[in-house]
Picture 1 (cartoon, one colour):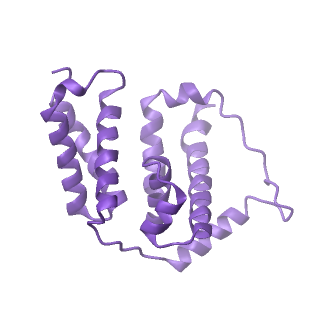
Picture 2 (tube, one colour):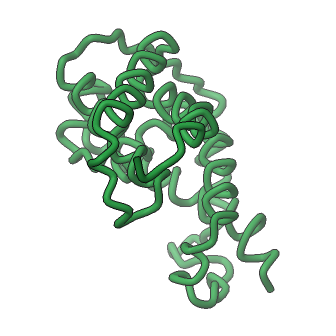
Length: 188
């Protein structure tokens, strides 16, 4: 066995949080994580150490989540908070002039490849994602982590493509701000 099974214990809370964000059901999230842990333990020889152990396990979890989404074994319960949407829109509007240009140019973030290699970056990114409104964070994770296309996301969440793109734009804008404040700004 190329890994210590205790590593799974350490990763479990992160895996459950990630699964719960996608499935919006704690019981199904626990099931997906349990299936992931079982798959890793049943076939320890499949971990070839070509990536970190955490990356390997998250990859398996992503496939388990996609399987559950395809099977449709969950209820979709989306809470729309009109006030949160309005405050998001106001926040985004404040970043741009009437002509659509950014109020201030985005600062240089240095070499992003080096930052991505640092574990702390992913911890900050996770905190930033956790701060997003539930629906906004969910659609971002579906698009960027589960790599679902817009049509699949729209079908799953029962939203229009235009709504999906607005939510993705809001997610990326808020994540950019959060990372600027909590990671890149701190690096300067």
